[in-house]
Amino acid sequence: MPQENLTHSLIHPTAIIDPSAELADDIQVGPYTVIGAKVKIDSGNKIASHVVINGPTLIGKDNEFFQFSSIGEAPQDKKYQGEDTHLVIGDKNIIREFTTLNRGTTQDRGTTSLGNDNLIMAYVHIAHDCVVGNNIILANNVALAGHVSIHDHAILGGFSLVHQFCTIGSYVFSAMNSVISKDVPPYLMIAGHMAKPHGLNVEGLKRHGFSSDTIKAMRAAYKALYRLNLTFDDAITEINELATNCEELSLMIEFLSNDVTRGIVR
Image 1 (tube, rainbow, N blue to C red):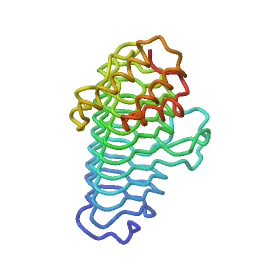
Image 2 (image 1 turned 30 degrees about the horizontal axis):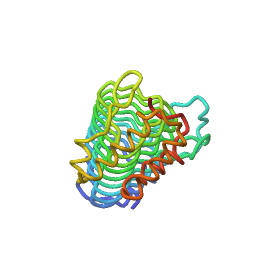
Image 3 (image 1 turned 60 degrees about the vertical axis):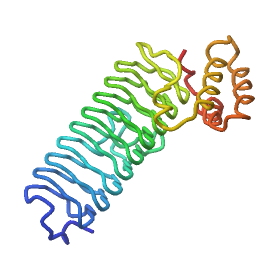
Image 4 (image 1 turned 45 degrees about the horizontal axis):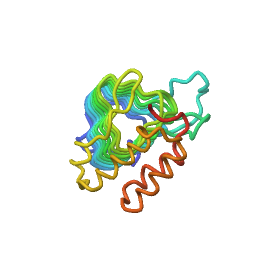
């Protein structure tokens, strides 16, 4: 509801909230936090002190924003001329100190989006027009350039840097200090400057309950993609054959067929 109708004690008296902002009745807002116009925040959110949230921004349920995070600020793009672009945040995310999430630009989809159940650690930067899925961990100081997409269950180690327009597949793990300038197929483990594949993210796959037979098939798919000196198209054909007995490989086929725009890590 509009802030002028909020009378409960969960909002600290030093917080500055634009009268047009729409806040659910049960959210907590800490001291010296600033919430601007065109911001809508659903129930269950906890917003610490000294947080700045600008709009247009739409925030779902049960998120936690730690102190000094900057949410929904204008994109760091010289082409931006003050258009009404958006940031959309889902449910149950943890957004730690000094994180910056910028809105989109009209040169792309106009929206930056963060899904559900993500852990965004301190000093992470998520730039304009990024699409971050669900159940993702971005460790301290990860920086995503504009137009990056990260699929579900990926983990990026501390200080990983991602070039603009890159796509990172599901269940990928990047080691700390990785510099990623190409697309990363699902299930891979990558490391280095520039980042290169280092096999499958086997431990992560085991933690997510993938069977030994499934991981064996994924190893064969990795071998087809990186070890048999096949052309890209021939590797996809080989992985398609493996997918007849491993449904999980359809995720890799879809990625390789539809999501690769910058070439894959080699």
